[in-house]
Image (cartoon, rainbow, N blue to C red):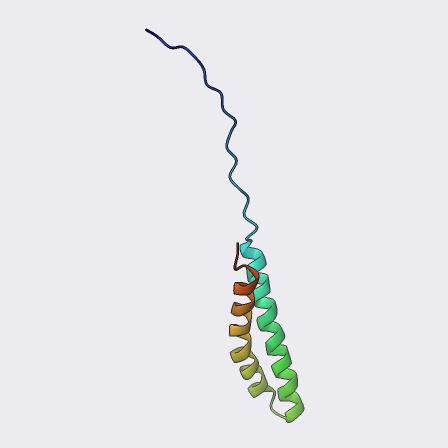
Length: 75
């Protein structure tokens, strides 16, 4: 008993993910940089730009990470 039937099935395409590492990196860098610039401006206004930059970075890094997590949470 021989079976010579041919089974043809459509090629399976992987689902495209909407997650982009470049996009996530840009959001992270953008929000971090914005906080650093805001800190520098506040520091400049009160007379100590260096402290403003440092505080902007301290605030900016968690802000950038939180923004990426919120934006890409369901991806």
